[in-house]
Image (cartoon, rainbow, N blue to C red; front, side, top):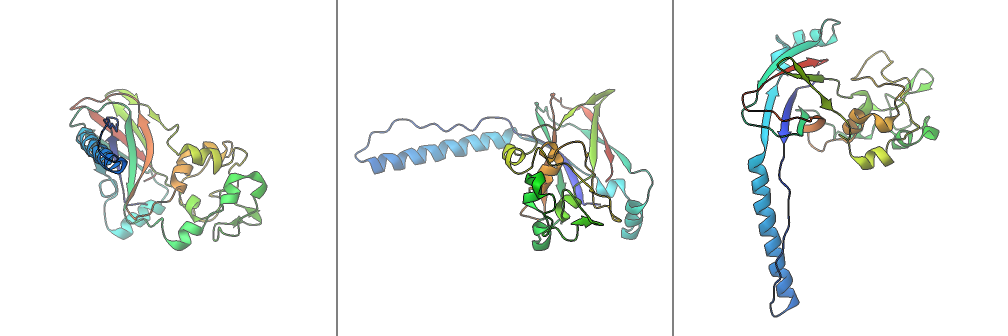
Length: 255
C-alpha cells in the first residue's frame, strides 16, 4: 500500500533558443550579449510552456480505503476485491498526448540499503543470472536466484489504472515510457524474470516471465530510483484530446 496520487500532465510548446547576430568590439562582449539573449529567450519560452500545462490530480488512497491504520493494513493483506472507481472532471481542454503519472509520498527510494539492493550485472546479461550478492534479502528463492533480484524490483509499484470517457475506453499507451538508454543498455533482451514474487511475502507487482526485461517498461521506470521521498513516475499516455467538462471514469486495481 502506497500513499499515492495520480495525475494527468500535459506539456505543450517547444523550447526554442534563438540568437541574433551581434557586432561589438570584442568577441568576449559579443559572447556575453549572446548568452543574455539566449537566457532571455529560454526564460520567456519556459514561462509560456508553464502557462500551457493542464494538470488534474486526484489522491485516492484515503478515498478508496477508509478506517483506521490497522483497518487499512487488514484490507491490504486481505484477499478481497481491491478495485475502486473515481470520477475526474476535466477543467480545461487537454491536447494529446496526455501523460499519466503516479505520485508517491514518503517513499524513500534513496535509502542507502534500498538503493543498493539490486544487481545491474544481472539486469543486463543472462550470463550474470547468479550474480545476486548485492540483492539481499531478495536474492534467492530456496536455492534458485531471483530475477530481477533486490528490494527495488521486489517493491515494484502495482496499482493499475484504466480510463473511460462515456461508454468508450481510453487506451493507455505504455510504449516508450522509459528511457531508451535504459532499455538498450541496462536491461537485457536475453534476461527473463525467474522466481520473482514467489516467496512468502509479495512486495509488489508481478512480471510476465515470457517478456524480456528490456521490454518490461513499468519495471524499468521503477528501477530508476528517485532522489526525493515525494516523486512522480510515468505510467503511460492517452493519445487523444480531452475537452473541458469531460468526465473521466478511472478504475483502479491493486491499490
